[in-house]
Image (cartoon, rainbow, N blue to C red):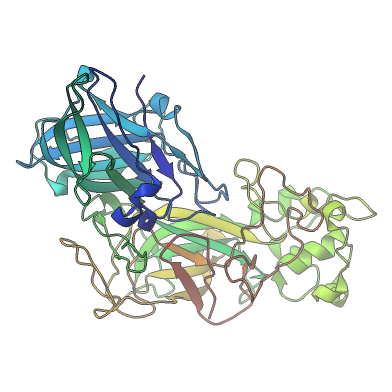
Length: 520
């Protein structure tokens, strides 16, 4: 039986040489057995909130579900001497390790996998399973075969459709060494890390996320702009790439984890039809859009109260539809009687929103269309969307992101400029050899980097998808936003669109949680 070891949900910094004792395996081979071992470490960039691979960027599941890993062993003459597939069936042998899975890759002489003595670069890519084991629903991987000359430019994947998915890649340098064990055992082979050079230090290949994440979490949507009623919310980006390049994989984190490399590793612009910015001189690509009718019950979806348009969902008459209107519906309030949080007693919300205790069932006014398939806790009366995107460099002079409120026929009724809350300048930027990511142009014109989360609105971590709504103090959905100024890592605070100002998007370069992107 083949044995594998995958270390999931570990920060890459913990996998450095100085900390390698956390994960090494002391190998004493049995007589006559020749095996070489290699640890693959899947770094989620988080030990709390990570996105389940193979799903849209909606799930709060603290898991990484990579079922396939391909390893390429390249010798000192730059020749690919071994291509090893770790498929879904083999991955099932993984065992729990903290909040992830672990397997140990074993190269066996009997399988023709033994490496001759010498130094090797080991490249790896990990991805979620497709319809056929060993394939991806989202990507086509450029074919690299045994005997090929290694070329970094050939190590890439292209989108099959329009949506990206999580994909991980990494590289490490190892030695294959033949040594004499005992008189009884004779000679055996092993792999050792270059930095240590000791036979009991199993080398490690760290796989880091190669895509970016973009989320939006909103409430209080305007019900009318210049007499027009909105129909959807859309986020537009100045560029969209369709090829993700697994290049310059060294140095994503240092031993201390304090130095990051900000890499734009996408290329080949999409041929999709572009959509306009507010300024019609500029065009871009849709990142995500949300139909208001998917979240709020009106029109054909409202069979009880005949709310014919989205504007009819404004129960307190403040000109916006959001969490206060959801409370108004459940507690049968209208107008000024429900225009403030203090107007509602939500002590029994966990049963009130289900239509008990003389209240109305929230599901007749607002639903989360994502929750049926992807566990997710939101504030009632809010909207959430998210996508993985291939990193891209900015378009000069064009805002990188723009949030739009659309009417019928996608007419832009209102827009919000989205500025970034941190910039990368020539002085602060760190890039690996071979990759040059140009400095951001401004707070509105910036690059989208790999392994970074860009979020508008703040999503908390206090949700157990296996037991939603069982805790009366933390029901699903939440009755109201609960920002926590003392704990910025765990507020549940959708972005309020009751503003005429710009939005600020928060960038998390460790992808530990979904942080806040504010409207400025």
